[in-house]
Length: 292
Image 1 (cartoon, rainbow, N blue to C red):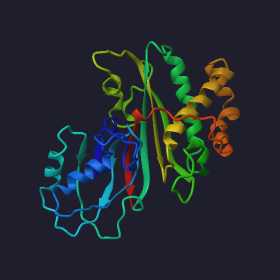
Image 2: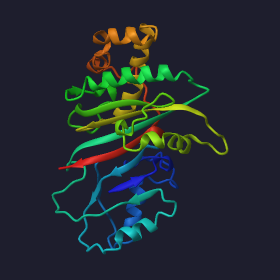
Image 3: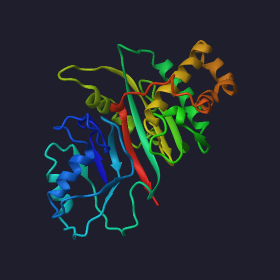
Image 4: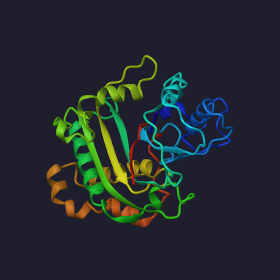
């Protein structure tokens, strides 16, 4: 079980010749540090989720094969070799040779945090309405097997582009955001969202003032390349159009729900990738994986 701060890496697991040699990927740094503790010269590492540059992971899963006996202090010694704390191994478990991190998982869950600066957006009521619409659009596709190639970077090394969302949520946190801790998108987030955003967004001595943040959480049986980041952008675009159509009037928006709730699902069905950019990678985090 592994976590890492993706801000420090040019990529997660796939090597690209364009990466600077002094900035290895997560896999590159992890593999080199593991080999320094083993007598093997090569190590094959598999992962349950490949992340883009600057995307982080809270609870990622990797697997590797070795004929060597792993000592009890292996995890502590390995963590001590990440001097900057950019990677942390939380646990290690022995399994048989049939286990593969990518194919031994049933689902993956991602969290996306979008901080909202006060000088960019000050209307918290409008933000609440925006996320309510986005949440409804997402919940309307949960449990359905759909082709998400239009909400991705295209078919890249995947046998299928069909995915089934097991859960999909969108919340607004801030002055008018959720205060009930039992309704948190993740436990404890309502009490720490501002400090999380501050750490994520702060540049040098610049201090940021926030009106809140928008948080997405999606769990699916599989994800396509850049699917989550393109989902964020497209859902917010469609939700914004709904607010504009009904003059941002909550009463009108609720009354017309049956007319717009399928708007994002219809976008998915078009399979059009040309009209949808990807949201910035820094806000994305692989939150957890489920193992068979």
